[in-house]
Amino acid sequence: MLAGGLWVPVYGKNVGMGSLYGKGIFMPDMFGWSGALLISITILIAFYIFTRWVEAKNKKASIGGNL
Image (cartoon, rainbow, N blue to C red; front, side, top):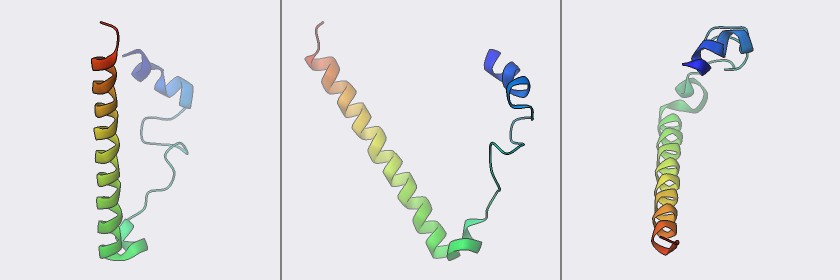
């Protein structure tokens, strides 16, 4: 609640507005439909691999840690 309440005084614009977010783009216009789909799927797979790695690392640390 505090972070949401301080957003406008700190950044000076409502959420989603201002230079903090940059210019919106439509990926198929820049990369074509197949390129945009490939980029999106690649980002999702990379995020999935990263989260699985973090979970495995946390699980290993909790098993081998001092209880």
